[in-house]
Image (cartoon, rainbow over all chains, first blue to last red; front, side):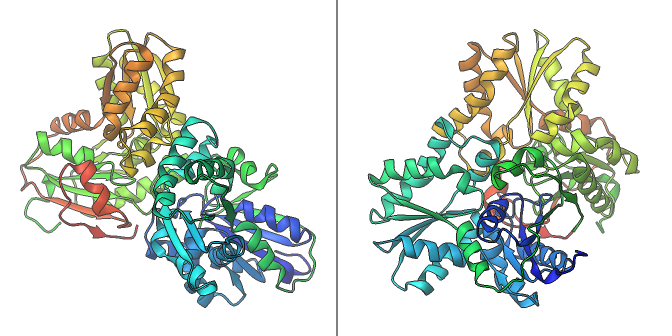
Length: 267
Length: 267
């Protein structure tokens, strides 16, 4: 960043392009914010990696963003938020917003029964970060968690409806709603899952027999960013990735508009 | 390696644990060979990454194995073989065997019609390496290729039969056999796919209306290794990985027996 007011810049990182859903949500509430986005597409997905590896990668992403003098960091990746938030906060001289806290807050607001289901990558679920966040917000919340490794490739393949998507979602969601029939809210604990929101909602209704509130982190993270005082910028988006494969195909699905340009970097 | 005859050691690398199917095949024909295996599990999968990134990672794997004084290198990863074989061969002082050549050879031997289908990761298919290998072996082979990104997570999830596996395989294989009804041989161009061999074979039969020969690289690579003169070793297996997540669960599926121990390394 060589602009006049670098202190207006928000840094966002994710393991890949899924975090562009957060950029999209941020644009809606803070259209004038300057955003530097880093997608670690060469090492995506983080969800199947160990906590130690995810922490190492997350700190590399933070260092990269700090080089662009960001004044606020958003960890769009649920896996990184779930396993590395404390390390990133400890290493960062600027405030950090993770995905898990805002997602949990949205779920607590949506749930009448206090029975909440969370789906995410293996690493996010194993971290139990959503349980911890939900319990700190509402101590007696009943939380059912389930890892859904096939949903990320399904979203990237663009198979977001039809027989395969329905069958995969059914296989993941049936045991969730069987284990706790009082669940009324489902948290999409991964930035890729909003692309499957309609199918997930339909299948959740079919297997539970009623409407289920489906919430995700993106809009809650944008709302949390609003709470930080930021001088207005020019609404620019600078996008860095560590690997460019499939970017032209995938990025618009998450950002909502075509990605005009990106820069390739090594971390 | 600090043993007496390091020249007996075969080095094998893969993006993850799928390459253990090659170790398994090698054990059957060369039970006395000492094997050093490297699974780059922190950066798996290679299949969705660019050629440049896969090449960089493959050379790092080669350097690591050479540090253990291997006398032969097997690239168990189809993606790495398809995109980085030339670079690895150029950088290696010892012979290198890739996955694509042996797989193509097995297919040419199995096919009566000369119409062959290849399925693999996005990177393997985009490289067109199987086309090139098949055409160099039998110039007029009709090759139909199709990328199947969901098959790796499906194999790792252990969903190797049942409704989801069948539906996913059907969605991938139907257009393949529709585009060329004379196909009689299907190449599994990814080390993960042999776990889905039964379902893939069943679906291929169902959509084509006849038996289809299903071939993969593992046993052909082992046969190619036999052609190299190697002094007998003690049949040891030393296994290195760059990330240990899910290893206890996944490794036995590919190796056929539990993995007694592994060592964690940074590349």
